[in-house]
Picture 1: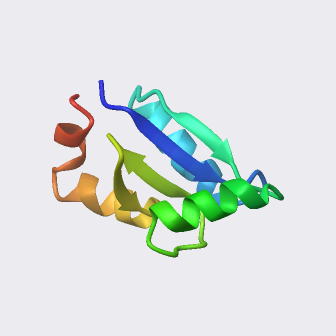
Picture 2: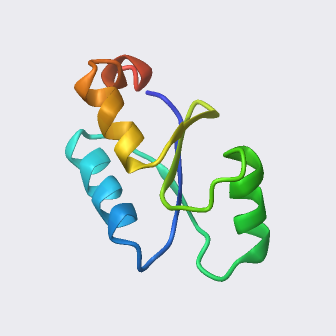
Length: 85
């Protein structure tokens, strides 16, 4: 299975929906909750090319983008392949 890392905010509905979406697919992920953690926010911004919205999704250290970007990959039939499903 692929390594999936999510940078999330605990109060973000898109983060919550993204986690539910991945869980429904049976995908395990690591969650980095950035809420008030300046270090994690900077790490997320650096890895994502400056993006500050959450969630930010990474698969095998490859930046996917937001939840919308993840769903777009799935609708194109590319997500399962990236996740090794």
